[in-house]
Image (cartoon, rainbow, N blue to C red; front, top):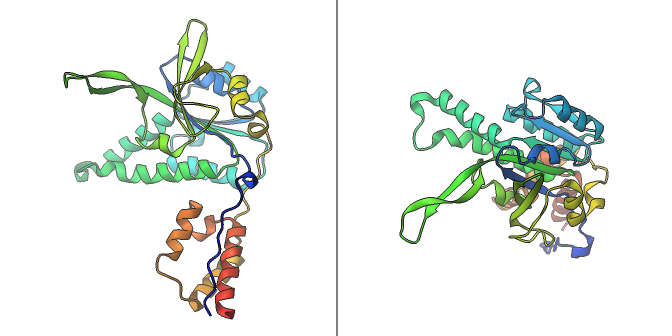
Length: 295
C-alpha cells in the first residue's frame, strides 16, 4: 500500500522572522560603509581595503565585530564561501555579515577567469565559473541566521528614450545581474549635505515600500525592520551528521524513488548535496523512506 503524500506547509504565524539580506549601492563618499559598520556585531569582509583605516577598524571593534581583509582572503570566492559556511555552523557572537564591496569580489573573479581561459574564452565563458561561485555564496548568505549587508559600487544605467536614442536613465549596482532578485531589499544610498539617504528599490518587505526613502542610519533601518530580529543572537545550523547521511543512502539503495526526487528535495532546501541539509530535514526523509519499506 502506497504511503499518502504529506503536506509540509505550516501556519504563517509559526514561521520565525528571518534576518534581512540587503544590497546597498551608491557613489563614493555617501557613507555606505560607515553607516553599515553601525549594524550589530559586524563580521566585516573587506575586499577593497576601504575599512582598513583606523577609524573604521575602531568602529568595528567597538561594535563587537571582526575584520577580514585581503590578507585573510577576502578577494577569493572559495575563502569567502568557507567563512559564510563557518558563520552558519559555528556558535559565535556576530549578528551581521558585511561584504564591502561585492562589486570588487565579482569583478576580480571575472578578470581572473578571463586570464585563466585566455584564447579559450568565447561566448561569455569567463562568466560561468564565477557565476556558480557567486550563487553558492548567496545561497549561504540566505542560510545564515545573520543580517547580511552587501555593499556594491554604483554604475550608470543606460536605456532608450522616447526618440529611441540611447541615454543614461539612472544608476544601478555594479555586480552580478541577478543579485537583487536573490535578496530581500535593494537600497541606493545618496548624500545631500551632511546627511545620507536610502532610496528603496526592489523590496520584498512591507516596511520598505519601493520608491520610499529614509535617513540612512542604523536606528532608522532597525526601527523599520524590527530591532528584536536584527539584534538577537545567531543560531547555528544543525546540519545532518555523517551517520544520518549513511543511513539515508542505505535506504535509497532499497527504496526506489522517482528520478527527480532528490533534485526536488535539494532545490526546496536550497542545497546541492545531503551534507548541506538541515539534520531535521534529513531525519524526515529517513522516516519517509522507512515508512515506504514497512507499508
